[in-house]
Image (cartoon, rainbow, N blue to C red; front, top):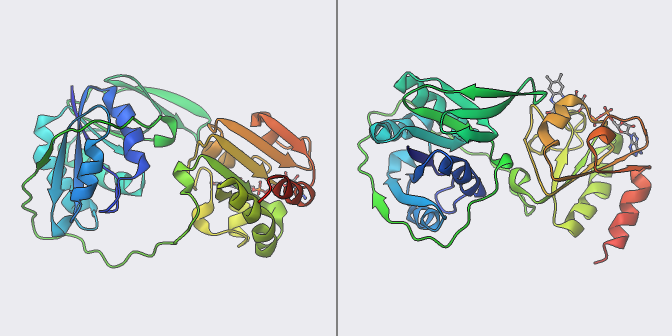
Length: 310
Ligand code: FAD
């Protein structure tokens, strides 16, 4: 089975999502990576180093600069007859483009895959992660988005050939207006190795910043938050972890003053090591925690920061 993996990138740098999605895609068979964008030759060269890639296809065109679903789907569809699988990371871009591809091919998409059992059988979460569904897909082309947090990144060191794809886009159906991106020096939440998250217990935006951020800085961690903390304005929206926020699985997740509602657990329970700090020993977060500390976060976090040194 030959599979086409759609690269995740910003026209300059290949995202870590691609190496993880590649691990899922290689379980389906031989994999070509398709880089869609403008002036993105450097991304194609980075993709070519990923272990397990047969060929990198480069579709470089001004109409693909912002990776809108319509032009990207058009290019993918022009190549689809060569493949039995089309895979993308379940990111904003992947979730935007692949349903259009699936609809145009008149096949059912399998979304949010967390495990590939064989080339037709996949596991995916349902009911906010409270149950895992095993799905058999009998479509002639499998169109799949994968939750990259569940897959290790493929290695590097390969040098696959890069081949240009001719692009002849139809008249544009959609128009890119602007990107409003938050700029942060911290690691990206979705791919961070360590995450420290704060909940409603932080009490205010100022306290969130005074207590959580210094520890994050010492650990080189990304910062997350519960929805209650986000809704109360203690933390920005894009820090939310959970069913309606980001799905993460870092090596270490530190939940501070977070009760552990199922909607929060849906976003972080696959973390390798979970540490919970909560004053309530009956808080549900302790049921998923590897290490639990029944304590006041306002006491232990400053202490932890001091212990971590400079
Ligand atoms: P609380 O539940 O109020 O918990 C605060 C915790 O802090 C308590 O356990 C308390 O014991 C502890 N505490 C208090 N003081 C201290 C202290 N000084 N030191 C240490 N601990 C202390 N939630 C998400 O997080 N992400 C989502 O994506 C999400 N999606 C949702 C989608 C839907 C459709 C719905 C209905 C809800 C969703 N929620 C989500 C909300 C979720 O149900 C919870 O309301 C939310 O997670 C609670 O946030 P919290 O744990 O910060 O607050």
